Structures are given as C-alpha cells and as structure tokens.
Length: 334
Image (cartoon, one colour):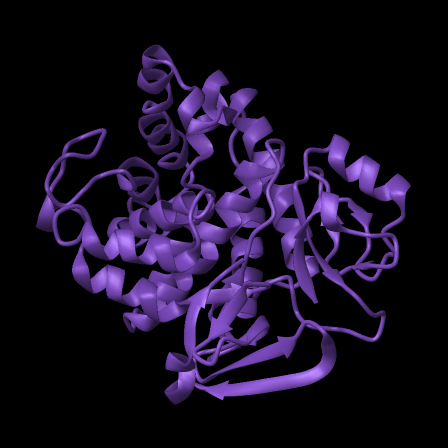
C-alpha cells in the first residue's frame, strides 16, 4: 500500500478507498483498477494524491475510523444542510442528530484507534471532509479527556457543523493565501453566521462551538476576543481540532502537532493539545518512515499500542512495532 501523487500511479495499481462525490454518491469503489481514463477523470476533479494497493490481495484500512456508509450519509446531510442555510430553511435537526449518533458509534467502538489517515481533499470536497475530520478528532479528544456521552454528542454536533456559516460566504472556498484583506474580513463572519443558524435548532453549547472555534487563550482570536476560562472546554477542543486539521493541508502530522504544542499555552490550552497528541498518529497510514538503522518502510496500520510497517519492495515483509519501540523511527521521509 502507498500514498502517491497521481502522476506516480500506474495502471497496475488499485484504489485503496472509495471516491465519494459531494452528493454522497460513490464515484469509484475501493479495489478499482486505476486505468488511465480513471486517473484522467480524477485529475480533472483536482485530486492530487490517492491511497493505492499494489496488489489486489492487499486490504489495509485507508479510510480512517468512519465506515463508508456513515461517511456517505454524513456528506449528503452536510450538503443538504448547507443548501438549507442558503435557502433560509430550518435545519433538519433529527436527521443531523441521527448521523452524529452513527459517527459516535463508529469512532467510540474502536478503543485503541487513532486518527490515522492522510486525508484526501479537493477544492470541491474540502468543506465536507474537513468538517467530518474535525468531528472525528474532536470526539477522540473528548474521550481522552473522559467526557460523558452527552458531552461527546454535543461536541460532535458542533464540530460537524462548525463551518456551516461559510454557506453565506462566497470566498469561503478560497485558499488562505489567495484571500484579500476584504475576503478575510468577510470569512471571519462565518462564526457569527453559524451561531445564528444553529441556535435556532440546537443547544447553546453546539451553537457556541460554531461561534468560538477561532477564539484563542490569549484573547487574540475572533469574533469575541475571549480568553482563557471564558472559552468553554467544548469550544477549545473543536478549536484545536480545527487548527490541526487546517495545518495538515501543508504540514505533516508530526509538524502540525509540534507547532500546536509550541503555541500553547499562549494560543491553545495545554491539556487540550496533550489530548490531541494522544489521539492523532504522528505517522499516519501511508507515511514513509526511516528507521534508526536507515531502512525505509511504509506505515500500513497504527493504533495507540502498535504500528505495522511494510517493506515497499516486499509487500509480505511486515514489521510490527509495539509502542515501546516507536523510538526506532528516526523520521518521516514521505
């Protein structure tokens, strides 16, 4: 199994995960042989990387903690919710809550799992996948902090819907570096607009997450400039998960985690950042790592207790590292 740029994928490789459209339809199934026609189609959709199998016998999990069923339904519901916001229609709270119950079940039934994938986003699907990832990471952090089930549900709801206010913002899909000063002013309004939408259908905790996930410990955040104890724990959790998930668009997991650690306690609560470090894989599935003896291997599975490393030249050659031996990894190289 490998995580490769499209230009390095050959026609004797197989897709290691389903490709899901923004309407929730499966466009390509896991296990599909990647013909030149399929690769051209994916390039047109602005995919840059894919998880691939080099043999049809491989079956490593490259989809994270969520089943395809929950991911498909969640994308469909989030898309419908964004449309409802634009059309000024009320949100379907029972349906959203039903989806979140499924998400919680998927995430919480796997006690030793961590957030272990390199997520694959395009400009068109960024908001959907980002929202799902922030929800999954936030739930894992909340469990690590020993929160109750009802608290985890509210955090999952708030995280899933934290960027709903972007439905009002035309520039919301632009890359950060492409935003003008005027764009930045407008996009910062998404927190308040999200709060206004969510408070009509959900608890104040859920609505506040949308409003407060960009607040910072030192008061430098927005929209209210809250600091320290004035920011609820639920908003701190989603704020850190959101910051991490945004950073890994340009940084490797370990680099993003180190940056967040360096920025606490000034920007982020240290206890919350520690929880993040315990539930996110430093070296996610698909990473190429170099061991202390100079050998390079691919991470094909990782949990809180062990990591499985594959020899890229001999797929059946697997090395299992217990957590006590993670120090044998010198660095990530790809």
